[in-house]
Amino acid sequence: MSGAIGPLRAGGVVLPGDVPRPRTGGWRTGRKPAVDLSRCVNCLVCWIHCPDTAVLQEHAVFQGFNYDLCKGCEICVEVCPADAISMVPEQTELAAGGVLPGTGVLAHGQG
Amino acid sequence: MARVETTSQVLTGAEATAHAMRQIRPDVVPVYPITPQTPIIQTFSRFVADGKTDTVLLQVESEHSAMSAAVGAALAGGRTMTATASQGLALMVEVVYIAAGLRAPVVIAVGNRALSGPINIHGDHSDGMLARDSGALQLYAQDAQEAYDLTVLAPRLAEHPDVMLPVMVGQDGFNVTHSAEPVALLADEEVGEFVGEYRIPNPLLGGEGPSSHGVFAMPDSYFEIRYQLVEAVEAAEHVYDELAAEYARRFGRFLPAIDSYRMEDAQRALLVLGSAAGTAKDVVDDLRGEGERVGLLALRLYRPFPEAALRAAMGGVTRLGVLDRAVSPGAYPPLFSDAHAALSGTGIELRSFVYGLGGRDLSTRALRQVLSELAAPAAARIRYVGLRGEDDDGES
Image: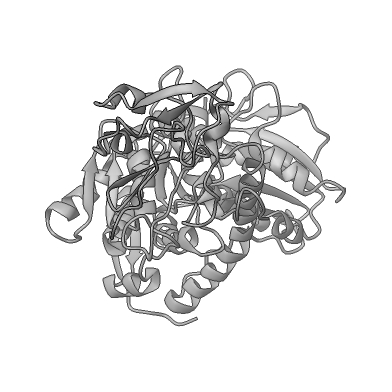
C-alpha cells in the first residue's frame, strides 16, 4: 500500500523520501510572522531558533518565512534582537517571504 | 542425515542454552537475572568474562530496560539475545510487543515459571502465555538438548527476511533449566556457520542511509503495519520447517514443529508443550505395551500455531486430551483453545486438562489416568490434574 502516507515498510520503518514533508502551516491560529526588513540585521537568530525550519536562508542571507511549515509559535518574534519580526493577522497582504510592504526587498545570498 | 562429531557434556538446560549463546556470539545481550533463568545468564556472563565471546553484556536495572535495550541494539544492527522468566517476562511484555511491532529479531531465552501471586518460583507456562499475542514467536523445548538446539536455530528464524521477529525459546523452569542430562553440543564453527552474519534491512548504524524506526502510526497506517506483523508470524511456520530440515541435514537432529510420538493407528492422544512430553512418552510406551492405541503430540512451535500440521498429525485419533500448564480464568486454557479452533470440523473430541501450575509435579500415574479418562465420556468441562481434592492420584 502506498499513497499520501507513503510506502508501509515492515515495522513502520521510514526512509528518506517515503513521506512528503508535512504541511504544518495549517496549525496556525489566525496570526503569522512578518518581517520589517528595514530593521532586520540578518543575524539569523530566528533561523537557528525556528523549531520547524520555517525560516529560510540562502548562503547565510535571510530569505523570509515558509508558511507551509510555520506553526505560528512566535519564537522568532521573541528571539529577534532587532524587533524586526511581529505577528500579523493571517489575511494581511505581505510581499514575498512575509516582508511587510515598503520595508525592503529580500536580497539573494551569494554562493 | 549426516552425522557430525559432537561433544556430549552433562549440562542443565540453562547451561546448554548459555553454551548455545556463547557459540552464537551475539553482539549484545542486555539482561537482568531472575529465577529460574539466572543460571543461563550466570553461565553466559562467565563465558563473556573469560573471553569466550566478545558479546557486550549489558547489566541493566530491570527486564523492561533489558528488552528496551535489546530492541535498540537489534535495530541498530547487532545480533541481540536476552533471557528472562515469570515476573521478568511480565515486566518485559510491554516491550516484547514493541519488538515484534518494530520487527526487531531479538532471541529471548525463557525459563518458563509461574506468575505471582502467590509468588512462586517453579515451572509453568503462565509467563509464556502472557506474551502469546505479542507477535513474538514461541518455541518450547522438551529437555536440555532441545533447549540447546532450538536456541541455536532461533537467530536464523528471528532474522529470516520473511520473519524479522523476536523469538522466545521456552524451557520449563527447573524441569529443564536446572535438570542436568547429557547434551551433545555442536562444534563452535558449526554454530557460527549455521547462524551466519546478522543482517537486517535499514539498520540504524552501518546501513546505507538514514532510517527512522518506531515512528507514530495513525489510523491510516497502523492497521496495515499490524497486518504485516500477522503475515510475518504466519510465514514463520514455513521458515521454521525449512530450518528444522536444514538443521537435521547438517547436524543429524530433527526437531519438527510437532513431535509426533507413536501416533500410528492411535485412537486417543495427548497434546502438550514442553517437558511434559518426556513423561508422556513413557506413559505412551507403557500403554502401548499393554495394547492400548495411544499416542502423543508435543508442539515445539507454539506461535505461529501449526494448525495444518496439527490436523495432519491427528491420523485416526477420535479423542485428544489437551494438557495446559496455564489457565485462562473464566474460559478454556490457551493450548486447548488453539487446538479446538484448529481442529474444528474434524469431529475429533477435545478434552481440556490443566496440570502442573506453580511446579506441581505431573506424574506418570496422573497421565495414565488422563488417557484412561479419554476412553470414557467427559466427566468435567476442564479437569485439573493433580489438584488437591480433585484427584485421588495421591501425588498432591
